[in-house]
Length: 234
Image 1 (cartoon, one colour):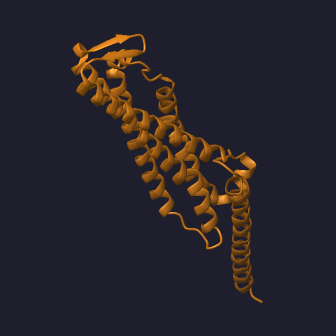
Image 2 (cartoon, rainbow, N blue to C red):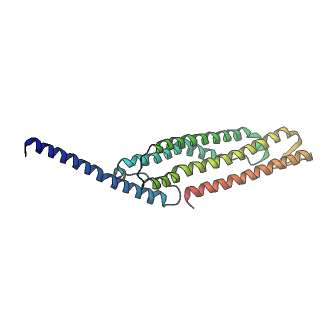
Image 3 (spheres, helix red, strand yellow):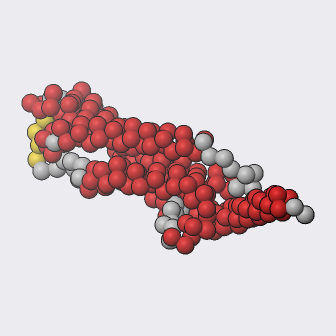
């Protein structure tokens, strides 16, 4: 065998060896990623987005970029939605009629904040969906990834938006009642948490608005329980 032939055989052998080595890593990386998604996210109740150790991230190979779609979304949600939502929830709603009248501006601000948070969630979900669509996934990975994505991106975002819509409905009802009370303040006598209304028409109208607000408060409580159950898995 001539030198050129030996060189060619060596080169071809080297290329084949590289090709085999490159192909052998991907199935292991994919299997590790599938197992991680299944056991650490899909099989566990509630919402879980585990952080990756450098060793685990390396074991996924390029599939770590697929997981980054999920983690980046959740990091953005924590920064842009979770903290403002917590700040919003710690603000006590007015619990008396005079308090509601005095704090109408706070109620309006809360409603606007809620609407803004929904818009942020929409934008973050759209950005994550764009990145997800660009992913190239084998047939055995895709269904598991889809379930993990739904559990950590789609479902939490949708449930948060549903809760915020209900919250905005309650706040709108509170605004309506505040406006009514202000418009008829000369016909209403307040004593602590009680209100005396002598005009029957005004009393009837006030009762309708208060019943509406009470019903909206019940809807908020249900939506809050649903959201907490989705997050905790209980």
